Length: 266
Image 1 (cartoon, rainbow, N blue to C red):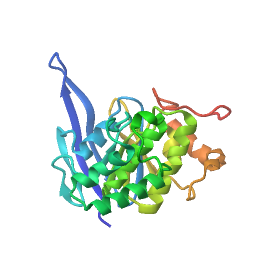
Image 2 (image 1 turned 60 degrees about the horizontal axis):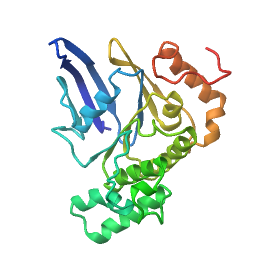
Image 3 (image 1 turned 90 degrees about the vertical axis):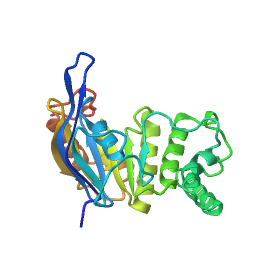
């Protein structure tokens, strides 16, 4: 099977205000198969988001190339949906209009748009909330709108940059479950950036571990945990064993990478 995403030798170098080269990403290869849920983890500043932005077409690499379904990326495309950490809802639009925005811009018939809005609001637990404005929702509910909006556009690839990073622990876990339900139903190809090892293990089919200095991929690990994933999986010995292995790969806990839970020793 041909990869859905194929990145070859992508790197990114910036020039500082003093004219010095700053390497954000060393030349890196990454392949993602159709229907995979790949999580990128690593310390802050290691190039995780740089890879995602290059694949999204929002950032041009200094070196290398990226293709989706064999076609080179030339810029942003609705077939690559992006969900960021900050709230991206349009505050002047209702929840339903936010979710309808992408399909409407793509010229879909009104009846199809309404069907997508109803389907995805229901799937993220916001059925009946379509008439509300974003300011009438909690932060977690607005993030559900972001996720529903991304899925409603029916992209082939979903790119998520720490989408739940600003939420409290309980809300974050609920949204992880909502996202997994959507993914299980549609099996879109997902690339998910996080610094939370537990989140990566709970969501991912494969985890790509990045290092800093050099900013590059360090190792990759297939997640051999059963599906569908259930909340109590986080307490299982195999889950904690994998978490420990990843933690050690990151040098015993890099900056801003979540450490082992209390009671778990290295």
